[in-house]
Each structure stands twice: as C-alpha cells, then as structure tokens.
Length: 292
Image (tube, rainbow, N blue to C red; front, side, top):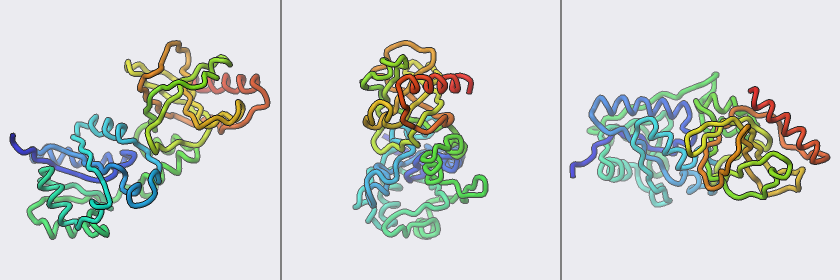
C-alpha cells in the first residue's frame, strides 16, 4: 500500500478556537497546494494532564468533540498517545521518528508557540535547522480585542458565565456533547421535564446557573432549550448535573447522544424559598429563552 504523505500540525488544540481554526485553514491550503493530506495530530490526553495534574485544565473540547469538529473542516485527524516517555524524547527523535517516519509528514505547520520534545527545545528555528528537507511554516500569534487569543481566556469567560464572550473567541457556540442518562426525574414532578446530560471526562463545566441553548438531537433536529447547570440547591444539593429542558417538546431522549450549544447566560444558580418560587423562575427562564 502506498505511503500516505501528509501536511501536519500537532498539539493539544483544546477548544479549536479561532486561532486554531486559522492554523487549520493554512494547513488545508498548503496541503492542497502540495497534493498532501491535511492532518491534525492531537495529543491524548492533554499534555498538561500528563506533566501536571490530571483534569487541569478542564477541557473545552473532549476528544470526541475535537475530532468531530476537525473532520468537519475536511482535515484528517490522528490521536497520538502522550506519555512522560514521549515528553522526554529529544525533539529530533520526535520529529524524525514520529512525524516524518511514522506519519509521513512532508510539510509542517506550526503555531506561534509550538515547541516539541524534551524541555520544549524543538521550536520552529530548531526544527528548520535540524530538518532542512522538511518544509515548514510558522504562523504569527493571533489577537482578538487587543489580547492574545488563547484557551485560558475562553475558560475564564465560561467560568464567569460570559458565554457570548467565550463564543466570540471560539468562533462558534460552546458545546456540551453527551449522552442523556436517567436522572432523578425531579423536573417531571414540577412540570419541567429535563434531559440529564452526561459529559465527557474533565469537560469544563461553566458557571452554575441557567442558560439559553440550542440543542441538536440524534435525528439532527434542533430545539431551543433552557439548561440548568449546578447542584439544584432548592431541591437539596444534588450531585452536579447538566439538565436540559427542551421548549415545546415531548419525547423520550434517554440513551441519545445530544449536542447542547450554550448561547447566553440567564442567571446564577440560587436557592428558592419554595417549589412554587422555583417553578415561577423556570417559567420566566423559559420565556426568556423562547424570545432570545
């Protein structure tokens, strides 16, 4: 079988934000010009989860979410298992054996802060000097509103409920992809049935509260929704849950994989004095979402 020759970029790409998307755009253009397969190699797990504390930082995109988005751009997607042994490789070995020999890399696209190999010594200048026969380009840093575009800025925005700000940096709505699982059915008892969405491991959970969302079901239909994220203190401080109430919808969603795209923050989570007060607030939230 003929070897697949690729134009490659490699990294964590958590969030696949606007900066990453520009990298992907250039990768695709350069690959097509050279008759190469545009390929994103994603480290799994996140490098900081291996070299630091597992789960920190929380993930803007799970592996499944990341792969779905990248493939939607017409790019090939490869997972590269990341370990301490990989981190300890000299960059010459990583680029030579992993990227060139194993994956058939014939063109390399790097972001402004890309560093490969032990101690991060494999920067753009070192790679070009060591591998003169491997064409490579490096993109400049990308700024938005005068600040460097980064995953950490998006995390900060989401943790403070600034969903629209986060979405402007992502270039799309922040998505929570997950399976609808059996909950305690407390929403049914107060007239607002909800789908309890099980998120992927280490997924970033935004500020506790209520949100307007657009929800795509497995049949590709889209529905406006109110999403409550938190511990439901009015009912008794339950385990953290992502509860989705689809407006004007009836049906069984258990077992479905759904996409919850957050559009805006309505209010912070609070404890209500009575179930009637809670029901009145949910009604107001639903009206807000319907008219948003």
